[in-house]
Image (cartoon, rainbow, N blue to C red; front, side, top):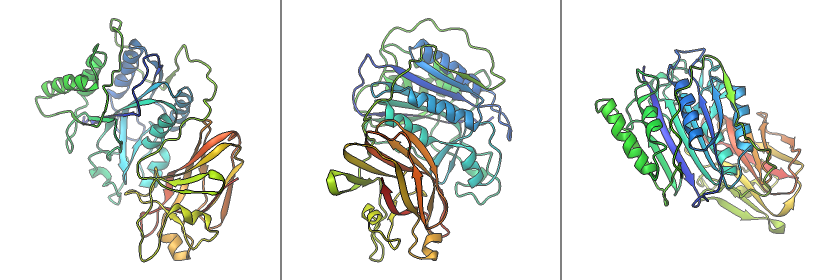
Length: 433
């Protein structure tokens, strides 16, 4: 069986203190209801969970989960993190690219068109953002299938069944990305208990005094040997410091756990009851477009569409009380992952967010541009909400219970109503009260 792209994404903002906790979320999906099962994915995840426990990680584990179970476990994992922690996310199973976004497929997903599959899946960027908001160092390991067996027909923007990979995962300085095989190739699922890549990773991830680059050199050599040279793990790194996933001698490896024929969730035995961390630093990316507001606040957009025909699309358009202008994101996809952020000069209670969706300059402009379907709301006090927006050009208001004493709020586009002509997504007006 064809196996799947594996990527390791490590995001580091600074050298991580040795006393920090190490917390892992491990998911493995193999018992898919709508397509052929992946025999090794649950084994890979179960074995990785045990290996990480042996290295001192506290592990949140999920095997063969549906979408709702997955989201609940992701939320429990994210809420357990603090800024001093190293957070690791491992996924084995089907993953697909739709547009330029990557989605992890739960076992209850059904075959269908892009819109149905997006609604049934978990967006990788949402997991990354949750980790980025709460943990000082983040590692993501994906063992996710390159081929897409879920999309029906040939109208998919990602190429339907012909799509051969996940899209590039964007990361800035201090990142490390490793793939189980070279770009454009497919990896093997393996004839034994584990895929060749995960089997090698299990062998070498706990090597004492070996940073991630040294570990991956060993993994690459092992996979090349096991595949007869047909599979060559590939990596791309902009790390500034060495990264170690173990800092002490590891215990003797335990016997492999049994198969997991049914859904399973395992929480850490020593999971502490942690209070919310106040004023978590706001995640930022290079190239934000910002403007100063009255009273010392700042409004920032992660990206802005380039001016066209004399029209400008910056965040200032959100405040001009007219639907004739709009903020339009400038990403290469349909806007998923783009965000607006408001930095506040002092701790503030926020009761609601109000907005006009899309670009309602005219009925034609509204339909031709994308509109927001799902809006993820994050705040400095670790509150998180997902708002479902209606597809119309009027004002919409959403109460935000629990957003008290915040110093910033971030609104991230989670999903969109796609425009009939242009891939850009717009918001015309925004109020925070």
